[in-house]
Length: 115
Image 1: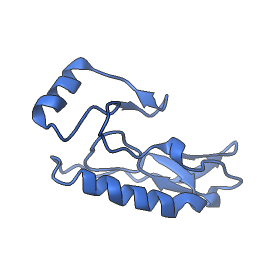
Image 2: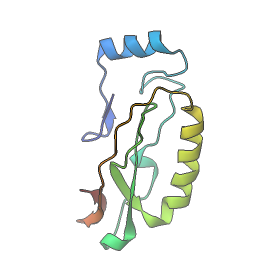
Image 3: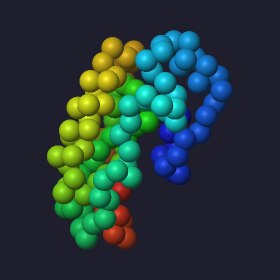
Image 4: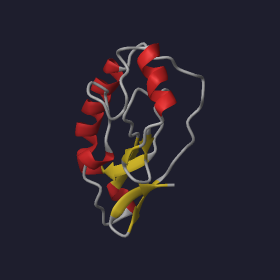
């Protein structure tokens, strides 16, 4: 499981076991082979809210993939390319009908964030 607050992985053994049993193609978030979209891969610095755009970060196939972080607009093409690869890798993963909450990107002390 990805912990957005610490930008790291937390494992719950029962979750990992369920993932391994449920599908060999969906590995643990911190294991090899799991698709990911990492906040740390993109420019997060900003001078104003207009520099920032919301994105979704994930370290395993998540559905729906909701915006939960923000990056600088300069990296949006790279992010969109990575997201397309992530979505292709996760195609066929179980999905629940949960709507994503709307988020707004802003600049907080020089770092893009969402609220």
